[in-house]
Amino acid sequence: MVNIANHKDLVVGDRVIEPGNSEKFHTGDWRSMVPVLDRGKCIDCLTCWIYCPDSSILVEDGKIKGVKLSHCKGCGICAKVCPKSAIEMKGD
Amino acid sequence: MEKHIAINGDSAVALAWKQIDPDVCAAYPITPQTIIVEKFAEYVANGEVSTEFVCVESEHSALTLCTTASSAGARTFTATASQGLAYMWEMMPIAASMRVPLIMAVANRAVSGPIDIHNDHGDVMAARDCGWISLFAENVQEAYDLSIIAPRISEHHDVQLPALMNLDGFILTHATERITPLDDSIVKKFVGEFKPLYPLLDVKRPISHNLMDGPMFYFPHKYQMVLAMNNAFRVTKDVFSEFGKISGRKYNIVEEYKCDDAECIAVVLGSSFGTMKEAIDQLRKEGKKVGVAMPRLYRPWPIEELAKLMKGKKAVIVMDKHLSVGSYGPMFPEVVAAALETGSMPKMYNYIYGLGGADTMVSDFVSVFKDIEAGKAKRINFLGVKE
Image 1 (cartoon, chains in turn cyan, red):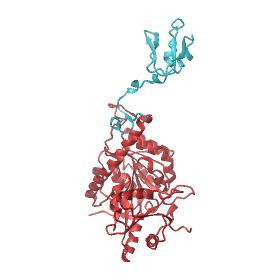
Image 2: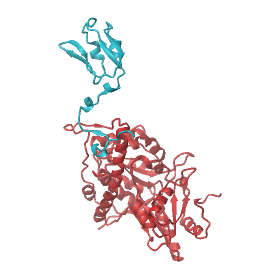
Image 3: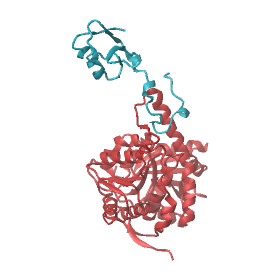
Image 4: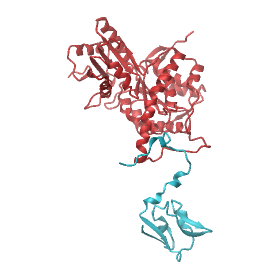
């Protein structure tokens, strides 16, 4: 039996009354492939940062620092758009 | 002095909504509901209401617009019939699960095919499982009164479900009857201000609405609707009683006529209640102990009230103005289920009648009771059909 939520904990009418709480929903749990960054090839063009649908590319002072995996679904868009093939998708 | 007016059922519904003055109305015309929307559009054009009237391209859009308008925090109403309701069907369970208060008048009409514009309950019965409250009117006065009552039930914070107000197509929609309307100020005071829970337009409390649920949340959200329907019994009783005080007109969850000492009772919906009362009077003159009941509230289904009414009766006749082809009329199994609660099951008969507007006279209803008395009735019978 699937774990069914307690109706008393739910707001009526399928409403979410806490704004921005999708951050708590870790879509990274769905991942089967993981992006691996080769810093030697990366030119910090930020193309992957622009394309990532889950805002998972970590950037500090204009430099790519890596991937935050909590929301990365392993879709591979970052690897596909990287002009230097600096990102490789590997089994997770 | 009480004011009386002569008005047809559709215009009476439009008049009630003019007095309520809703925020939004989106509707698409379809016979026999058209006059409601035409009349209401006239009120809008004349500046007699402050409603935003949206001309949509279909019934599907009408209900989608009404659902979202209500979610935004607007008091909203619409009207349809038959194919229009069928086209709205996809949005009906969504409106209910979004728990938006919303009123829809349904001018009950047969569903095609074969193509037919006349009255039966095929449209609303096909929509009965959508999670909407459903009320039935017997005459034009009731169509007017229930239009004023419905928002109070639908908008109650313990209910928060959309509601259907059913009136029989042509028999009521196009029949001119004498009614006693209420003063505008009394109606306004009775319906009060719409106080939505979590309206989308409340920018201080931003929310998201109608999201992907999945197995973890779908079932408990449905269960919340079950609880809301249960609450609707209490709320409806309270609102009926309050309405009685301002109008002198008394409504009940289940209406009954001469059922107290009756041995055999019929259960009907809508305008047939009036026809059946006349048949009961004729049969009573012959000394027959007969009566008739009408579930004013069809959803939620009043099991308790019906069981109380059926207790100790010898026979119950369920009159269905719709047919689930290959089974019974839709109300029959539900009345049988309610009869289980009596502890001693009466003999149960199902009569399918009046499909596609087939005229049903007082004498036809009298013959139903006579057939049962003579032992000629089967479990399911098709009134007037040559077998």
